[in-house]
Image (cartoon, rainbow, N blue to C red; front, top):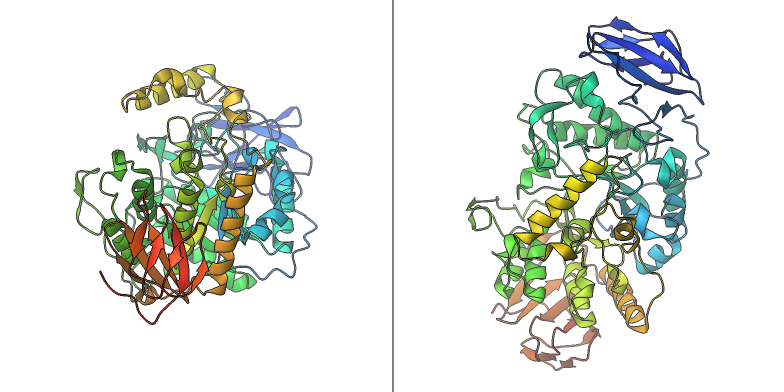
Length: 580
């Protein structure tokens, strides 16, 4: 629905459509074969929906698939809001991915308020931490009050419980005035199960399953309109909401074999908006493909996205520090793998993945690919929340181990991302939670998770029930820090400051030098040299010099350093480091 036109909706499936507007019903006329139009024009304050006739019965009133506002949730009427907003971010010139430090957060659990205004209240904290970009987990409407956001069904709207469209604009405006960019996590690979009526209108999906829902129709009959639905959403976030970048969820689940892929269309749109506004817009993919074509330029035969998450570095680091080797960690767990992955980005570059049972991945051209295009992390919402009880690494690791992992990520040349709370060693879990309006759906969701983790040896009785409010409440961050947490926070602040001061966000991967021994790695980047011990006893590393920073108490000598258990040291970088 566009406020500059009459009410209209794309609906090739029903035999008839009528408009429900402010308590009255009006006929609609089919035009252009599949679009229906009413004589009435939208006005601010309208509440409306559509009723569909399948040849026998009229449906209940359901929301506009292009709804911009759902004040009563996904099962309620759509609303019309003014697109006007008193922006004050005229001085904001944007932020490119190189040099960014991203902070991923869930709006509902980040602050006690659980809304956009609650995030605004902690922007000074984020800035002092060293963050200059935030990434919001999805904020599109979902069924119920509590959800991670990946069950969204209306891709042009904003969840009313967080503050709706106006609240999101207030947050973006405040962030820009604080020098912080805003990334929005968006899900275009499936629709959520609660409140998804779009299929009654048109073939938004094409059958088959992604594991979360039906495959979105981006390449079958009528897919042109589905692509427009998605691209119009992308344009809306960039243009009307001043969003700086989008994180595209699980792009490997898009069934797209077209000559011009949807991802490429998105990149062209983002670059066009960047050029016309003078403010950079970025696209970051979550991809399980280990395929550098995602971020390779269009001129070079790639999709032209600006960045992608890198799970392999996370897996290598997590497995080495935690000792976990199950599931997709099975190919990781030693210093040689971590060193190689830090240097090459992907561990799997065409060799066998034992977890997948096949060859996987493709090599990154280090000589032409900027390091900043790869987003790295010690954990994410997935790596924490998709565990059986949502336990954070900080709930299982010592402060020294936590800072060791952070040092590896922040001393690398890749774009770093934090997951909310890790910077002070939060001891609250981040569990999987939802509150579907259908109790049967809640039951099936809970039973499915219990079965899944029971196969991995977990007692089903300890798996939190996603729909219980307590599961959501325990996931809220506790902002009352202990002294140990204050120490961890200071360590994170120091590491992020040194990253800037030592020029560790330099883009040239060929300038990165990594060596290792059985228990340690050394990584020379910018003006700094990180040496790190992954053993639970002291280790002597054959690199010494002048100490810049350590969280523990290393013994730094002229040509070697004794590191404490799980300790690290950042030294001034020598001209070269020895390959061991």
